[in-house]
Image (tube, rainbow, N blue to C red; front, side, top):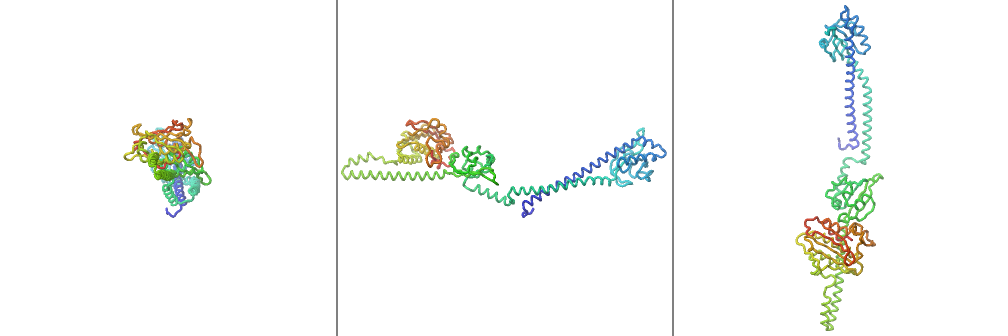
Length: 545
């Protein structure tokens, strides 16, 4: 068909062609069957008439009369008229007629070959005789000894058969025409329904829209997940699959959302709430914007747009660390300046011994002195993290110390140390928030207690974790601390700690610290070169406990 032809016209023509082909085929078959049924009915009637005539004693006895036709003709005519056939012809063994619709033909030899009935068999077929082309039956007449003594031929003209067939054909043709009209009208209606369902779009427009949609959905950086009213996934683009750690987005289409996504995210998307909220999915913090999908005023599902907020939090954490370091350096510079003034004054007054004693007494270097060698942490990243957290804690009046028995070798080669950084950062943030002014935090990081494992322990003297919360403290939105103004939610950092440790094959527990607060203990495989790295580990260090 021409490409310029509209979809509606194409559908109409195709359906009309199908309807007409079906109707014509059905009509031809029905007419053929009707003709066969008509012929079979006449054949059965003619055989019955011929056999009944051939078995009449009056017919058999008349063969011995001097004028057989005088007896046979009246009987044959009565049978012909009562059975509604064209002719009933009785002939002897030589083919001489004893009856005929036209009396002038009596005494003449039959016009068709009588060999088959005279041989004792029944003949059925179409032949042309004195009355024209007819559908006929010929049966033998047997005498008392079982010998063939003649034949009976019963037939109906083909013209009469055709007339009967055409009389019945009128009703069939009316039915076929009605069926064709109904089919065409129905096809036009179906075409209109389909056009409405596809909003009147043409195939080229549909293809262009689909190609544009696929390019747009898989090209945008935001994740997109759509579900129907039954909670089954209808759409998931590449960005969403990456954010949700789904290996193959196409493989999950049609699956229930709770079987694919984390419970919290699945509940939010399925609810269709029209709001934006941070949600923890795996080890990522996602900013999820939910909305209902409505078509023609009907709710048909829900859609969620996913943004990875961990990237933003990573940058904020880096900025916060840089600001903390700058503040620490500024404070340390001011402290050193004061100390230099004291030393300068003592020297100007001639108190050299006092100046030397002062230097020895305060020569530790201040708040940002490097992690001492006796702290045992040789890993540069962990050491830098502890320095930044110690500076922040000191600004809040909290003492952060590293256990003297800590031991962490600097790794050789490539290792996924960012997971350890994530764990330590979140545990220290949690402890700093738990401690009040003047509190204490003790950090222990050891890789020498178990083979190929590192154990992180953070103690604080805060309020601790109540016994009834210890099983749930690692769940999202569960926290032992009171809500803080400006914080949307709590419990994210400890949840990430638990999930990181579980992914690496370790564990995380909480108990009571000797200081009376909480003790968080995390065990991680330290030789983790073969373990999967966290999706966005750099950002996880910025999660809030």
